[in-house]
Image (cartoon, rainbow, N blue to C red; front, side):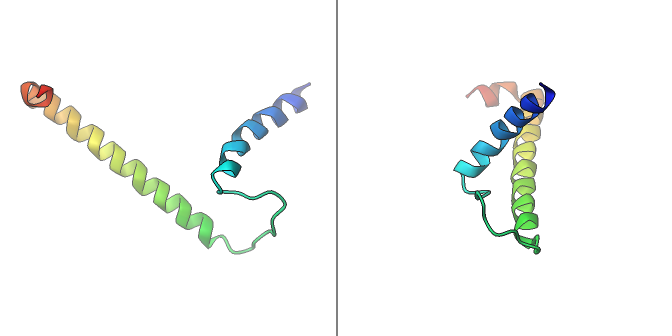
Length: 70
């Protein structure tokens, strides 16, 4: 029973990655992980950008709430 739940969870996580082209079914296994590291770096930079925007908006909301409402 636990194995079935684990497999369903795994399939649920893998499906969007496969649909977006991040992973391929039955592809050739690569020993070079450079492409994986580059993808992780891009995602990390995107996350940092989002956090910067969030922190900036929070600071503006604390100091100039009227400006932010406009």
